[in-house]
Amino acid sequence: MNTTPHTVDVAAATPYRIHIGPNLLDDGSWLARTLRGRQALLVSDANVAPLYAGRVEAALQAAGPGLRIARHVIAAGETEKTLANFSGTIDALAALGATRDACVFALGGGVVGDLAGFAAACWMRGIDIVQLPTTLLAMVDSSVGGKTAVDIPQGKNLVGAFHVPRAVLADTATLRTLPARELRAGLAEVIKYGAIVDADFLHWLDAHRDALLGGDDAALAQAIARSCAHKAAITTRDPLEHGDRALLNFGHTFGHAIEAEQGYGDGLNHGEAVAVGMLLAARLSATLGLASRADAEALRTLLQRFELPVDVPAGLTPEALLARMRLDKKAQASGLRFILWNGPGAARIVADVEEGAVLAVLRAEG
Image (cartoon, rainbow, N blue to C red; front, side, top):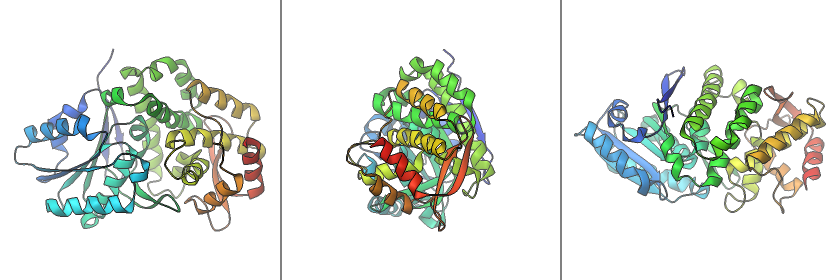
């Protein structure tokens, strides 16, 4: 098995590199090279910190003996991506006496990455953030591109900032401790890249389904690298989501509505909600005459082969989901805006979608 790390260079306003491969969290010399100062805050959650925080701190300390490291641990789960925990992270930076050349290391999934990134964006108007994602979902999505945010009761990611990382290190060995459900949820976001820009990737994923679901390092590293390369290309063209970057939200308008309506607690997790959302977006595309229903059903089959949900959870009404979509960041004053497709690999932005068409698709799922 080839374990040579993959690298993806992101040509942002401040360029950075993504490293992908097994056992990278023990590379203290690489971790230390990301530091410009002598202070580091390691932010993690109660599930991940016991597994990896000590290793990261030891690697950093060995490479930089004079480094002052503090650890801030939050409870695990999407419900913890709050303004209160953002405030706690700011307090931890204050307690460290973090200066402008300090660095935040975000060790965990998307919640930790988003929360720690937002704190780094705000502390002294912006200090370095190094993303150390430990879930597949975070490796291919939230750790790349510089979006940071917290949730509020009215919706997901409504308070945040753009703040690109100094570097990203995706240690695929951490995926061995990831629950199977979370691995599948991450694969939903991987499938998304095929759906929006790379139809051939969908065929590759289907052919390597067993290896991916089985946690094969080489297959996962290749899927992560290909996904990150697609995301890097899109975010480089459109760093602040004024155009093409919105394509990355395929399935997310529906998915975020599902997450918000179920309260970010029990029910579908983010990747699962996106899986359902992608199928709904494909069906809405067919309803509007943009793509064939056969394309939507082929996507449904692929999602099911990856053991992902394809139906709206029971108890979520079409009217309630539509109300959530009106508050979505992708909505505009003139009406709802969706990322739809003309078929696999050909996503597009569609503005002013009539609510009646959206309700018809949701009611068909009820």
